Image (cartoon, rainbow, N blue to C red):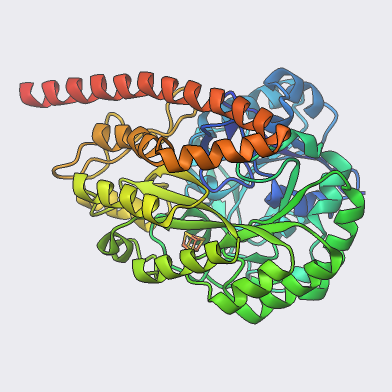
Length: 492
Ligand code: SF4
């Protein structure tokens, strides 16, 4: 029997979505959680294992420690903002259950394995990059030195085994929706732009694009695009439909679902035969023909990372999509009745007050149904982080990626553009986008047509304004810290 294993998305800041399915670890505008997909694969390979998603299920640190007493092995998915709290939790678990072995996984420890092991005696080992088989092999009794892709302590120093070759046969992995069905309550998962309740999963790993800010391809999944077969996806979805009759939407949260167009079209046809309502991530360059096939087969929404409304910024971040292409794609999608949730990032290299206004105008022009505005976050392990260090953009005093509530902070200053201005322009962006008569009319129209939509939007609206209010406190703290820093450098 393998070690009895707990796969943990740890409790953290209140309503923090930073776990094994979140590309941007942060507390969101509206309470929302992604599924802990990465943890679900190994959880499905090990008899007696349990996947515990503490944030979405509102399991406290005390309850988590209590649950962990029953286990011999803990696999904890950590993040850069969550790491300090996660190592405190791991230590408390170890104090109460000294025999438990603890592995930390995720991008943060992949990039900084030595530092993590030196900082946290409670961690027994780190798995770098994808961790499905490394944790399984440990639970089945393999010695550290025989497990590829891990870092551990040996004779008082940190030792690293060789990297593990990337998994190519994704069809050999368990179906994560079986594990959700076993261990999770789908009613705990809400994402404002998706129908409720929803389920998310991946059909690929890795992304060939080179976006400099993007965490997962540079740390976890790599740039090689690996795919599950259409048969494998269809088999999972047929069963998921039976597991979750109450689910109103399935979301394919692949880095990019549409990179291999014939495959995306084939999967769409299979989903259409199953009569599913679905949505997915896409780059803003999917041709109209593919959009038509997807729409005809149940596609409701695309999540599109536009990032910026300035072509030079798109070049700076190596996005690989031009604005004219993005505009044409958006027109086509709209014309076909596909809903778009557009995501934007403020504070990317090359940002100026003018480019911020250009991006807001671009968003209003292409008019996605809903938007998300994030702050550029230089995560360790990304090209953006290296650039920020080399160019001196990172703020020494205020370089934390989230504040004490888990809300994103603006971590970079540029010549002519202070982080405080970038931070406050997020609110300006939301206001200029949503508080236009045309937009408000269309949102209210949806509410009037459906009482459920009305209830949900009203609740989310209240949360949204509360979030904006909390950001004001963060803005004040950032301004005070920046003023203190400039006073102290003037004193030097
Ligand atoms: S296309 Fe999307 S997933 Fe791929 S590197 Fe760019 S931002 Fe990341």
